Length: 615
Image (cartoon, rainbow, N blue to C red; front, side, top):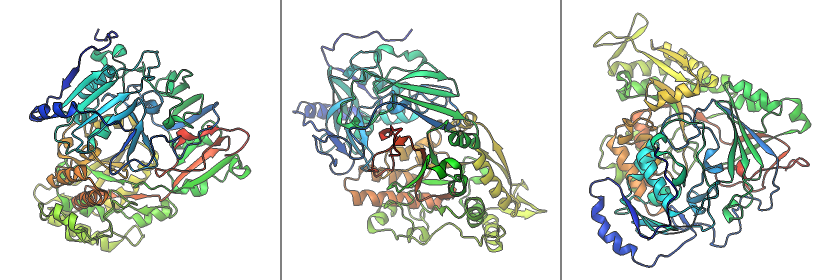
């Protein structure tokens, strides 16, 4: 067994060095900096200073005196086969992070990217961000009653760096060294400090118990939950069907400012459904308390039911300051038929958004034109500024002129489903890429191979959308089959990039950072488990990500993100789909919520059970 026994209090410093060449050269200078007196702070922002003062009473979007009690039931589409949120294998159950496992710092969802004390009550971060030191809250303990020590933080760092999901491995291997100063203090040396987001990424690291983790089996799927520090413990599991969380009456952090008005339900349950229609019917029957709606047609027509007319179900629309992200048909460029950018662009001409929006979504969507749609980070409709052009000058020809000048947008069809003009443009582009129609099939000029591929989907809605796209592709002689699989099978295929095309939505934030390397970085393209599903291997992408990571001021950061947006758009790695401009939520009136909605949109962890009023 590799389970660690509880260790004695630390008497000397203990450290872990990241196995990265070159980083150790910075350690001697880092040691001298570490000997200086720390300047403890209550929070940190990615750019500038955090908005909340050290003595803030609660998060601005929470109601501090919210009633406690009752049960909240969510519905979730799909299934799960593990309760380990941090390993690579398996489809993890929802709700574990935050409810059971906590991070060193807590995020405020009313700011682009700011963190405040949680398991760590304070941090020391110099201006050059060459190191970060966390001081643990002396009250912090695991749900089994054991105190949280800096040794647990070091253990978690080493565990996830060596055995965790690839995202953790790649992030934490960028750390030069981790040093335990005493039982409550741990220091991370970050080399040059050029990666200015890394201290915040470490602040979001969970804390797992060194005394209760079996390292040898950590990477395997399991229905045995890990012990956490969070406000809930798992009280019931039906594998693949449901998980129930019970509020821990002995939770150590219930009186922290970041927790006041949160975690208001005595019990939270996630029920899993294989079919979206079945899940909607369960909501209408009261088996699910709240529903985030993503179907414009259902939102406008599907809620004409007695419970809504009586006022028992409340429907609300919320504005959000977040980018909607890129939602699209994703080309796996690892596949030979999608290797040519001209071919990828051509297939986009065969997607009739106008017809689909009118006939499938009742005109309730807007076309997506940017990877950061709906925010100041989007490049759509804007010419590149001088900072962007300077960043892109090292990569001539990578960004098309119409994208650079803000003139590009996805093709606009006549809405007939048979736009001849767009078909003609698609065929002309395909011919330049070496494909021509012969006897009704699009074939390679060089090999006579027919152009065929599979669209992998895991929801009925995506199946319906893909079938509509496949009909459009047929007009150019392209044969696309649509394969519907369950969510667990889909996850396994996505983890190994075993697909031709998928529908995927990369959600974005107002502070994109290290995760961009997971989405489109060269190193992620051939690393299983990352989300570079299109297989992008474009050095300009990595350069723009590097630029946004080192930006110190917001305008500089925005320019770097927009430059990244332009490089991705010029690669035609997706056929952009659509988005809705508001967040739609339906809830039974026995749920109540605070009056204030944060920048990110409604946060359900601030809601409560209030049977006497609608809230």
